[in-house]
Image 1 (cartoon, rainbow, N blue to C red):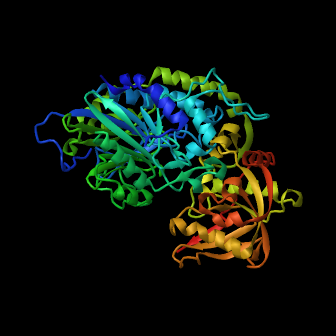
Image 2 (image 1 turned 180 degrees about the horizontal axis):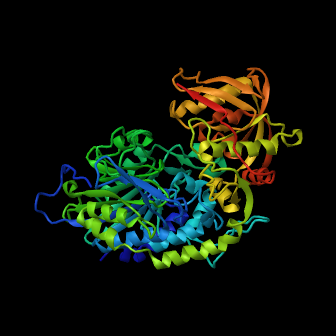
Image 3 (image 1 turned 90 degrees about the vertical axis):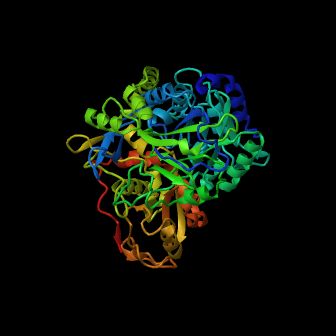
Length: 599
């Protein structure tokens, strides 16, 4: 019997465990010690994983770049995505496997388009239920609205409405919550772990243990109210403790779903997501992975929105970009006598979620290049009609708000740039204009963190192009408020230098009018922000300046800890309201870059 048919027997226990938060407690790989001998029959179990969906239920403008199997060194940009297409591929992959497990590796919700956020992400969880998610792990964005709201999302029930808030709960009827458990071994409360550290799935005569963990930097990525009372411990240590507990129960086939990630290649030389050599593998997850017990057979990662399929210390490490554009699929073969995975038989691949708009020639080439077990599933996959209908119902409910025209722009404003980005400058400018008057804070300039700008503003047709409320919400989905604070010139310099924590090529905050500087990438640490000018004048280390940031940054988010020392704080409008007011003034353009990047 397939696992997804037996899940109904454990869902009540899963739901109770997750909501009450009571925790008890293609590459061929070399076989580890204790693997079954050659010729021993094994039980195949297919792991199907996606990561960082972020509520992208619709497929508009999603693509993935993969190696062209018909031409060495060439690549294909393939149109992909959509929850209905993803559900169809999942169903097709499960049809070709005697036992299967579907995993969400975190950030299922949070930082989402309007079709999810307008409904408190209930739409996304209901879609995940229809897709057949077996188990999920918590990502950092699961904590955006705090623990009580996360637990409500898991257990169901309608949220209390808020005055003058367009966000609605139970918009299409009763909300019954997730039909899958959520796990995380390293999120702790005063009484233990917030969520179960792991979950055990029965696959015929064998068991598979799935262990979850989220990046320990979550407190720097979420507003303090979202993680109040929680401790995020070392990921590897928590995983190893959970693995030992499972092994003590006789579970030897172990899978980790880790909401932390890595990168491969370079910006100028991207690497195909199935290149198992993984050149230039780097990132926070690498050290974690190397410290995870050898008993773990497969590591599914997330958070960095990258695609890779590596072999680290003899086991696959995978990630399938983000937004439902791809799936990571690994076929494990488990010895029914010992419960161990025969790693010599493991087959792991990242697969694109092709949809109705995928170029037929691209589809044919990619299908033909995959191993038979996966090419058959890709060829047979069809969009899931039930998921498509549910997404359509939510999209129609969101349409009046999403399609409301709120402004015009002179050109596409994207998130690219060697220093600040056009989209980031637009946001920062709107926030400065909302706080520059003495009555509203007297700001000298505003700064916008790059991670807070989630999408481009795409100019469709002949400029000036219309901007809809849905466009703005997708770009700024967090609902942060503005904060004006006082910093000395020395603190402003220190703040700018904190951008180097991600290395000399890290994305930079976008400034509004009122701040310009030069960023010297190869200068010594602490000396990269040069020729800093505020209101056209050189920075004075002892002068006090008024600075506008969003509430996430003001509380030290993204590692900008200098902002926690800001004085004479004054709260302001919500970020989206500031942008709406800015757009009322005429056709928008971000203006020229305000950061000059040099070597």
